[in-house]
Length: 624
Image 1: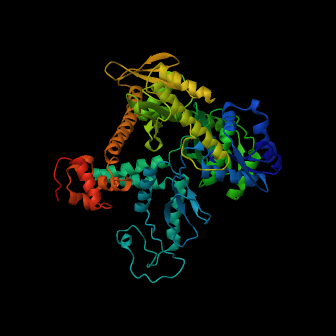
Image 2: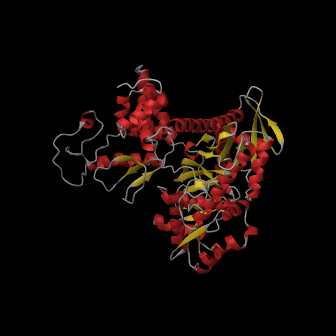
Image 3: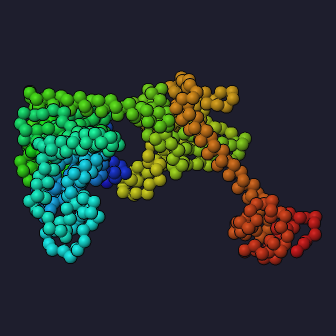
């Protein structure tokens, strides 16, 4: 058994990464530290100073592991990789990993090409971007290809080849054909340099060429072609759009600004290339409740630049990061050149930071609006249920219970499970009432609930002993719903108190027309309006609990009916009974069968067939 206090004594004072795990062995948090022993001890020895989120996490820690590294820098890299791999519940997480395209020109190639790529390599090529407006980028590449006849093939022209005929692009003037035609290399490189100047934002020649063609087409009354050039000119303007200019025209920076919501944060990254903004990215990150701005930015920087295609020489953030020097060393090593993290204090860079933060705030508002508009009905119902009950926890798992019997005979209980507001039928469970005699629904409910949660508590203990036989009883719900009123709710509370479990319980009551009327919670009936997401959700839960209980009850009745008839026939045991039912499908069809049909059933012989036939046809004659 894992004893946290004893394990803490064994932790070294070395740099490294630690992994916190819950009772199911799932990694719920990954962190790094310069001194593992000190950092891990803080979690378990000074709980009062923790934020509510950290207190909740520590409460769920069952075991921990750690990986020792030689340096804190190695720990930082390993931490970032493990967070990306396991996506732990209590780490802040980027909602998606965007890889926007870039333009690549490899000047080491003979007759270089213009390529669109998504990953930057250390191949000596010049990279431009990344570009967030992909449609405008594609249009720009098309314009460049039309004006400059640059090759697009993958041939390696640094070596001789046996190509004798150029491709179609040569014949439509989209390529000079350097693969098999003598092309002036200086003239070709002049075109490449012009394209580079345009991509750098230091040349207007391309604009002038397109404008000239547009005006010429308009003069010739070819308005369709003129419109095409006009659209392409606009596409180029989008790619080259610059919102602000920094004094130093050589600046290459990323500017990171954030805006915080309740449990998520919007992050904007603006790209400054050659002193001008040439694009931006936006991210939504989760699990930021209770975290400082410094922690959020630090975690974002580590996750973002772990896979970023380009790292600039300078990164501007809102405030100095606690592990600033460590991150700078990591980024510098990754980039191959010095990288600095700075905080703008005044002037144009500070103004630009304010603009980035405003954009982050606007994106946060847009995202919250989209979530409200696109939230499915069952999620809206969950949120409304949480709100009407005054609960502060997301209702991930809801369990609903019902009892079904006929005058106390064949009494059964049902447990239906809703995960994120949807039926999770693999988690449904049915209970045959064992200890209650007669039509006593309250006692039957108490038996079902006690059996369910005692089984769950035992499973949790087994998991601690590394007995990993899991049947999902160890996963407890955030809310229990009883199909009934105050009596059923109070029975459930009594059982939970007996087992020292703190789980909210509510009941669902129906009107005279057997429709869901309201919710019973804390001995008060809460009315629900029809045609709302909440009404649809609780009605579905109530109907499903009732349906599942009834179906199991009927199943038992049918089994008992079959047992009471076939099991009383001499020479008919369990195997012969199953074979007869499998062949004929029902007792009614067995009654109508003749001796020959009965005898030809697997496992039957003539004597057994006669016994069955005589049982159902006492007054008739034997027929074959």
